[in-house]
Length: 142
Image (tube, rainbow, N blue to C red):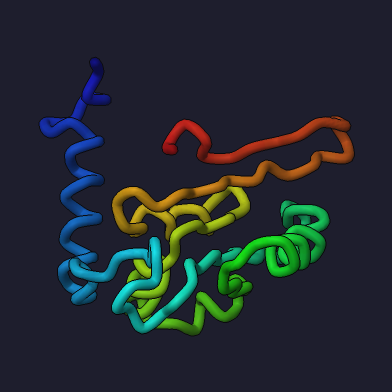
């Protein structure tokens, strides 16, 4: 495959960067809850990253309510404004603990690069009313 004119395969560079940030955050051993045995959290954590504005996912509050009602999980809704005020090390520790992170497409989704192995990322497209179809950003990255 192409290295996009780079000396190092970009996939390897991203992997190294993520590994470095996770180590710096002291989050190497933080993993999602699977069965709750011997853990500080007794149920799996589902984080919804909430974007405001024109490309915000529609009906996110409904999705959150349904997950809270129908699943035996802890739910956290984390707004982009809250994330901006949170140190990167803490952001990494938070997403490492999640079993599932639901995120809008675009820049906010890059936080999910720091998720623990075997956790699940759900990237939501946005509705483009002018085109009357779903739009997506950065899907090539994932």
